[in-house]
Image (cartoon, rainbow, N blue to C red; front, side, top):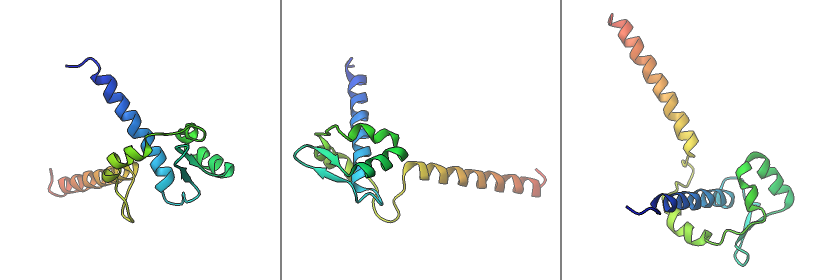
Length: 118
C-alpha cells in the first residue's frame, strides 16, 4: 500500500469540494449574477453579489479573489455525476426526506404493532 494514498485521497476530496462550491455558484438557481473569467480562471461578480452570497455561504469567501485553475478539467470529470433539472436535489434535501420517511415508517409500524396486540 502506498504511504501517499491517504494524502492523495484527501487532495481529491478537496478538489471535488472546491469544484462543487464553484460549480454551484456558476450553475445554481438564482445565481445568474456570477460569471467565469477564463483568462484569470476565477469567478467574477459585483461586490454586492459577492457579499450577499458570502453571507449565506461562508465557504465561498476564498474564491472571491483566488483563481481555480482546474475548474474546466474537474467539470469534465465531476459534472456528469451531478443531478440537473427541475427534480435535482441537494444532498441535505435528500437526507431530510429520508429522515421524514423513516419517522413515518416507524410510526406506522408502531401503530400496526398496537393494533395487532404486539
